[in-house]
Every structure is written in C-alpha cells, then in structure tokens.
Image 1 (cartoon, rainbow, N blue to C red):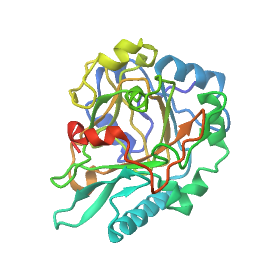
Image 2 (spheres, rainbow, N blue to C red):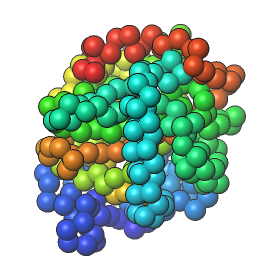
Image 3 (tube, rainbow, N blue to C red):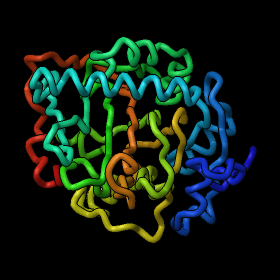
Image 4 (cartoon, rainbow, N blue to C red):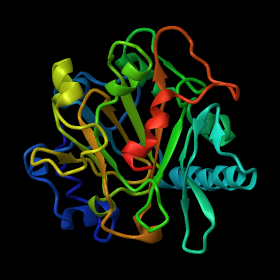
Length: 297
C-alpha cells in the first residue's frame, strides 16, 4: 500500500500541495490516507481500510479534464433551474445562494443526473457497479429515488446559504422515513479541488461501528459544527472519488477563503436497496426538509 499523508508528493502550487500548508487536524498526522485507485471491485486491502476507518479515497477516478467538463454541466443545470424559476425538483427543495449583484445560483441540486446527459452517462461507468457490490447485495444506483444524484456547491460569501454542514450521521434520514438505520455509503465525486482551506469533509474515523444510541445522540445533529479534537480532514482534487459510511459522524467545514475561491463542488451518488421508491414532480417534500431552519439553510 502506498502511503500518502495528504498527497505528500504533489507538485508545488497544486491543490494537494496547498493542503499540506494548511493546518490539518491531529488525526491526519496519525491516519495516513493512501493513494488508492479503483479499477473494478474494491481489493481486499481497500475493503479492509474502508471497513476499519469508515472512509476511503480513490485518486484520479477520472481525469481533471473530465471533472472540469462535468463542472461545466453543473453550471448549465444551474442556469436552467434559475431561468425556469424552479424551487424544487421531484419534491426536493433547491437551496439557493445570492451573488453580490443579487443574482441567484443553486447550491444544492437534487436529481442531477436526470437533468444532464453528461451526468447520466457518468453514472454508467462500470466501476460504480463494483461500489454497489461493496454496499451489499441488492444495492442499486438510484437516480430517481430519495434525492437522486445530489450536487453540492459549498461557498463562503455573504449571500451563500450552503456554507457548511454541522455534525451528523445519515441514519437520522432513515428515521425520518420511519426506517431502521442502515448501512449507507456516501460516494462523493469531486468536480473541483478540495484542499483543507476550502473546508470540506471532516469525519470521526471508526464511528460507523458505534451503537445506535451514540449514532443518534453523540452530538446535536447539524446544530453542532464545532471542530472535534479527533476529527480527520479528507482532502481531494478534481477527479477524485471518496466513499464514507453514512453511519460515521461527519461534517462539512467552512472555507477559510471567500467568493469563487471558496467553492467546493461535489456530487454524491445515490445507492439504495429494498423496494423501489421513485420520486416524481408530484412527490411531497420530505419531512426533514421542513426542519431546514434548524440546520442553517
């Protein structure tokens, strides 16, 4: 296994190199994040790492150029949603920010692959089938279920509503659907660079193995966004892919930069098992979005 403490061999001036200059949590000095690559199914070594720590990072899942092309598709989806005056997609609300000139942009786009041929084609990559097999028997890519392919654009500026996310586990969402908390994999594809200074994903390693009581009560979901002494920063570059177990405690940190330089754009792959639960334009708003005032957006 090639050990890479946050891409130590990165070229000067690259996003990964800048991450080394930023102050990283203590856990990053103890847990080294390997430069894994994904060719098909996860290898035994990769599975062991993921099952032990609750997260894994794959470098260069696609080229930087492909990631940049997909980011342009995000901007096209954004422009159409704003121009059409849309407020929700398949019952799921859009989250908007405002630029300094007052123009709106979408910060959280649900069902992204249903609005873009480029993203729909992206999800046909056979390596995603290897990821669904890791999730468990019967899992599928659910483009039209729950929130579908979600595209997040975190920005730090006065008009942004989606700047950070407080500590949470995704098990809370299962409870809102009146379901038992389950194994849930968050598959994040990075459309832009995510060095430490743009905030990004923070996890408490190994907490995916915690009892349900701790999963639900260790922290106040979404309200608490205070850095944890044991948290680990997961940095990435455009084209990288990460997976973290949704039962793990995680948050999205606020960028130390502002404006365009602060943007962190990540898409999350929808994995589901069990009966089909398709969403349409007639679908009702999920209950947990009615509590959006509690989580800061």
